[in-house]
Image 1 (spheres, rainbow, N blue to C red):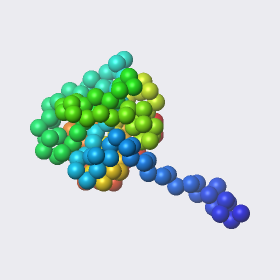
Image 2 (cartoon, one colour; image 1 turned 60 degrees about the vertical axis):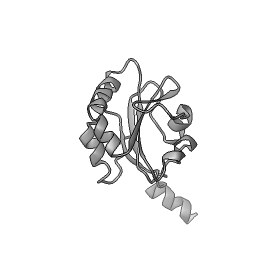
Image 3 (cartoon, helix red, strand yellow; image 1 turned 135 degrees about the horizontal axis):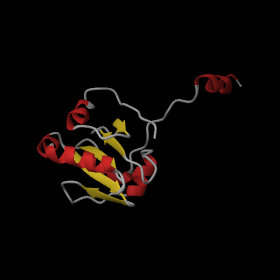
Image 4 (spheres, one colour; image 1 turned 90 degrees about the horizontal axis):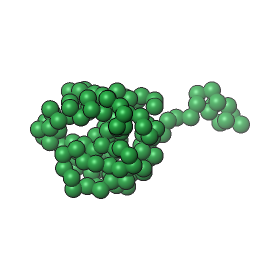
Length: 137
């Protein structure tokens, strides 16, 4: 009973999302940036432009970029990966389908940055130096 009262008062701790199976090959080797896009949303276009300008730096920092849109996952630069878009959205607690979102995953498999707005390349790189940032969808 005391346990349930404590949970009611302080709430249950937010658990870290489980890394989707299709992202496991990146653990300990690469960082992964997931952009949840919708064709009707200009934020995805803005994010795409900013990332293309930072293409070389993304390569240097070992960051793979994927666009999650229309039920599929598409690599922004390197096309050799097959990801399960639905599993990624569900397990990482991504934004609802049709909404823009950004999730950055570190080499350790944890979420380093979560945003509902486009982020500059510098903000993305800085996320590796700071604690995870949470934005509710």
